[in-house]
Image (cartoon, rainbow, N blue to C red; front, side, top):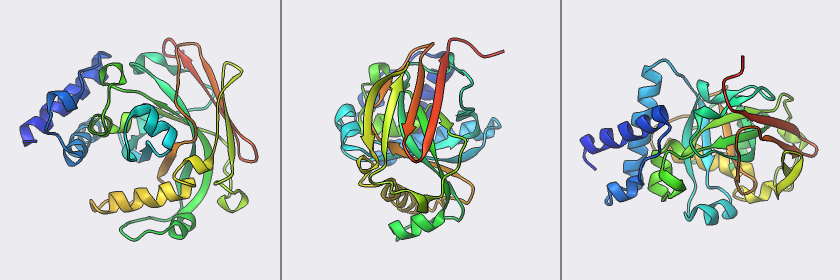
Length: 265
């Protein structure tokens, strides 16, 4: 894609954020777009947000489980940036008007104690770089109409990012086996999905190492203090205003998100 088309595509996505009206798939509008083009579109949006005063606070990994890739019709993970405005306190209502077609998923969040920069980051390196982990919920959203996304569409759309809600009790990663860690996702008190950490590329630590190497190829470092959402343990679940969703990780903790119809007072 030409630079003008990159800017045009980013502007269309930014417009969808503002208006709440989704756009047609970019992969249809720009049929020759590549994954590299999609990341350039993503970066153009992040640049716009940071110039407006938002701040990058971490990264998110998407499409890590086989179930999610089948659900979305794609075949490889992707990643996006997390900005300060995307984080919401647990239990406080998250305004539904910030989303177009939201879904939610349970994840393990890593808080880094040391920087990670690929290439060459191993799973052991990733483990040693983690200060603590937290149970998390990610609200994913798509600015692409009807979630008709290819890998190009979701990458360009900042990996379909929406919001992050973190649990409040830090866990030492040495105290839990994330590969076998289980999770139940409850929507309005009823179990909607279950899964284990093995769904996330075998273990969420594999996802963290993958991310460090993927962004390292672009000269990007995962910095100490940043949050990394490692990817969904279950399939995503659609949510609507009034829904209350809890991710229950036995031995790790619980985290709850509430989707409100308007900004809380």
